[in-house]
Image 1 (cartoon, one colour):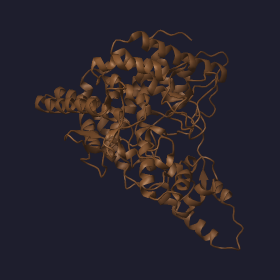
Image 2 (cartoon, rainbow, N blue to C red; image 1 turned 90 degrees about the vertical axis):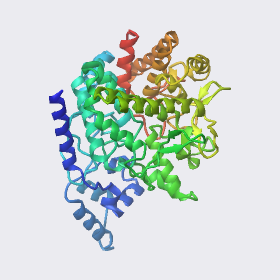
Image 3 (tube, rainbow, N blue to C red; image 1 turned 90 degrees about the horizontal axis):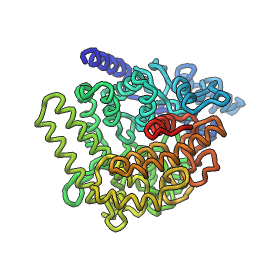
Image 4 (cartoon, rainbow, N blue to C red; image 1 turned 180 degrees about the vertical axis):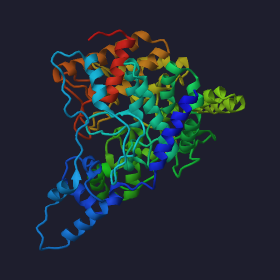
Length: 516
């Protein structure tokens, strides 16, 4: 215990020493940033914000402004970028699937390809250095991601990689201590927001190895994260007082600029907007939800321009905060503070009541987001509605009624579909995503619907293995409706790797003894 505390303290000090007023790439490079992103030097705007400058960024900017202001100079923007920046390589560059390799062996090897060791600070880089090892998802994602990591850890647990899992948890604790919250990912351009708060759930996994002492060890980090979501230490507006005086939460990014990693797309959308700042706020906030993008967040149910993320009380976010409150109760008990334990348990009980009051549709037997503007339930039915089963928030009677809805509306050939609309957005039909599959399956299992849970697990595992055998890759997301396709589409090309797909696949194969 003492050794763990010392290790964690050293990690936090290490990160804190590097912490400063972080500048995002648009602040660092100014006009150069805008010109690169809007001219599409790189098809994916995330490429440039992840580039590493070869020399002092101030000198690069000065040279750029000088060159572009002199009409006598024949100037190539692409050549200038190539000469002054190191373009990041894909996380799994050089990794190849072996012939006739089984998927479990593939994932075991892939952990090493996706692992990054402790970071060394690099001047001008957008990367927020982490003091311990971690897993990146893969594809265009070259940094740790918050909610991805919980589902990746499910697989690390099955691979008996508790050392790496603990390193990742310590990294997150260090981020909380340094920045006041866990950013979307460890990049400066993600600091204005977090992601679905799974830190407490990660500790639950570590508890299986080290016991309840983990809650005492990480109590301070848990309290700071809770303070962030409850607007005690930040300028966010996550907290919403409901009509009856109860408290629920929403997602809320702190910034009102186009996302640096999607600058071109956001800027084009903003041109036609009557309120650009509000549009950018809602686009950014949608990224905090993890569901970017889906008609779940659109006021008209179809158009990105109508995005209204900040108007919605998401049922899944509030289930996560319910879990965080319960975990804080455990941490308080572990440290001998029973008064504090009762306080957090009471907060959790009140939130549970509010979720069931404001998010459950008694007629449709499903959980929905609540719209604080219309003071009514959202009209968008999504698989997020199953999460009260995953977090044991739903009464047993609700669960029984919900199973029929799940089977009728969401279960497809390859698993459960994300929403009931095929809009072209990646978090809509016909796509299925590993974290949502896992939470649906585990939620059913929590309430005794083991046959239905195993059926969905078999569908999802079967699809993953089929695509792996035909492509040699595990994908970020899948088309669960047409299982003949290799992957689902969306905002950007399909990514392979892939952290949370690997984790959930290993976990489900082990849980249900599913063979390849």
